[in-house]
Length: 224
Image (tube, rainbow, N blue to C red; front, side, top):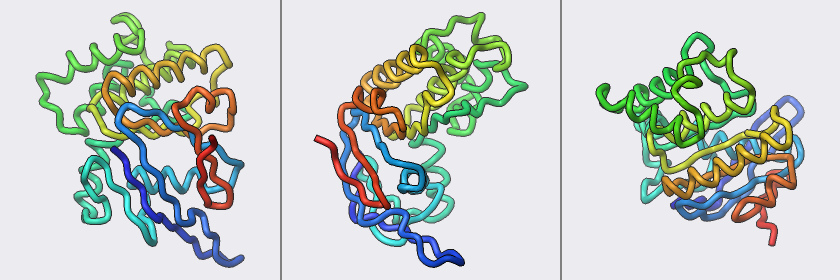
């Protein structure tokens, strides 16, 4: 379970203070998919960076399954992120000189999975997102955009993290393919009981989440 309480983040710029995240609080259950919507500059990216341990809040707390992230030192944050947080990006971020399967295996290596288990786990995850062994042996350039995003989802869920952060995961895809990607995220969240947060500009995509949250000038509210 994800518990966020009174989260604040302010940036100091030449033009003055920017209150990117202001007193944000919300909970999310394991297996639940939440959509976060908001205009450019509203604070979406900053919130994801805080939740993904890529940046630290000025105030507030983030608790993932009983672990309070503020209590972790730099090494502990890095270790927790590699094992308990998965990322899905708009531009896929696959390593081009590795095969699809090797991209997934590399994520498992970073998460310190035993070497003898990585290959079978990578095969399992690629099958979960509908990619066969032939597609798994191909490098990203030989896959369609939708197939590359499927690999990215397999990679994100491979190490069984508790939290998946998806930043505009359908932004580079046509609507039909994007719809399939959202369905895969929902199915994977349910199967592995991970919390999935999807940042999107697409209201139709957001409506398919279990809950919708909107952020505006750093303030988060739930949409009924």
